[in-house]
Length: 246
Image (tube, rainbow, N blue to C red; front, top):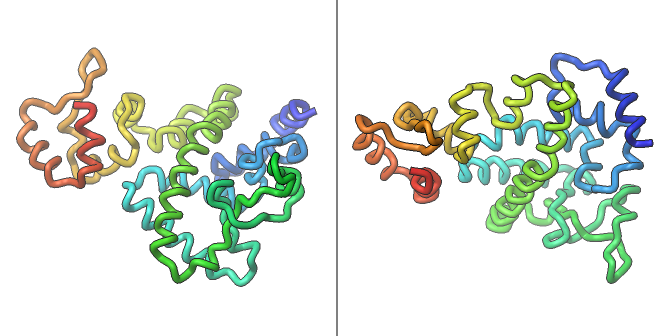
């Protein structure tokens, strides 16, 4: 039944120019198919707000440094915490940190095996609007969750769209690698984080690095002193992300 719905959606779906990848995932894989989805994280994508959040994550947030991601996530939390309606203040944070439930049909059916009660996988951000330290820690937890969700689940859906020629190579690269630039894609495939590459480009340092024919990353000989000086001036985490490859 689920496959028939997906094939029907694929056959009749019309895309708009402004459609982003989460909108396409919804139109092809989720629309009219919600009752067949057993994974609650994926089922959330039926909501426009969730799709907007992940579109922004793929296009903007994943390119940011950790510090920038924490800052932007904290700002998002504080804005969300101001909503007057509790349902709008709820943030999905998983079973380990969740404090409350959200009354949706799919969620109510997702029960704890021991207690047989709905799982507390949401948190009301309004309770912590004045507790910045807690919200920063929560932001770090949430970012790790999002990295895992994007890497292990969302990426697979984008690959599905690409394999079935629903999206083209340029569109695929933009969301998977965060760019359509072939050199940047090569470095991402090598292992460098897109946020690290983005900073190297921003600081005009990317041209000082090269991949040899064996796929090893090197600093160009003529740029070694300049690049080392630059690297030594950067935060320890950024230095670590570079030095583990050169």
